[in-house]
Amino acid sequence: MPELPELNPVVHGKLRLALLSLLSTVDEAEFTWLRGQTGSTDGNLGAQLMKLEEAGYVAVEKKFVQRKPQTLYRMTTEGRAALTEYVQALKQLLGAAIQG
Image 1 (cartoon, rainbow, N blue to C red):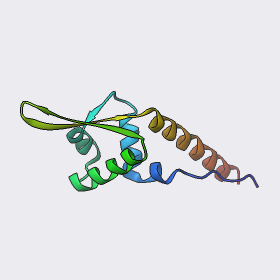
Image 2 (tube, one colour; image 1 turned 135 degrees about the horizontal axis):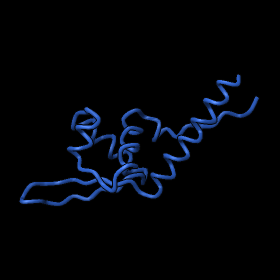
Image 3 (cartoon, rainbow, N blue to C red; image 1 turned 30 degrees about the vertical axis):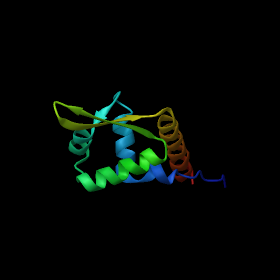
């Protein structure tokens, strides 16, 4: 039996996977847009984005626009690589399950 791949635990979280998937399709995204797309609470979204930032998978830019705070997120090169590796590992895992 072939060895099964490890799934990256940082990427594997449901909300973190959704966030990386969303960020992979845009140059950058505001916190409020990500919240709307995922239906997450501010606290949960902030915590999951922080985990992705700590892993080096997303970069954060905080600024003010007309005196209102704006937080922008973008996927890093490391984040793209991690998402790609995760998808490949998942394909390999699913292929093994189908063949098994």
